Length: 112
Image (cartoon, rainbow, N blue to C red; front, side, top):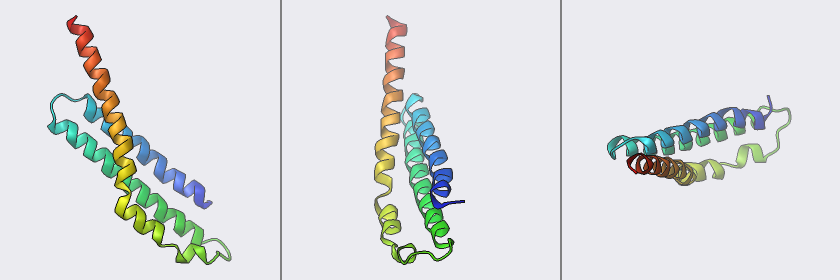
């Protein structure tokens, strides 16, 4: 299996799960479960990205005659570890906000 397929098989299910969890949190009433869903979405995205990137480099290092970059590029792993939560917060926050907006409009239409 090539390195891009390995990355995609890990990252995209994590992305879908993160968006679904954040949207679920945005749909919930109150703030405790809502924030738990948002935080869970961010952590799932972050963990999925970190795991996918680790699997990507492992698959790259296992090819015959891998280039030197396959072994020397640890900076991207460190960068994902330090700031990987930021894109997760943006995407999960967007899913959370859209679910909140839909729920608010639906409740307002039901009262009118």
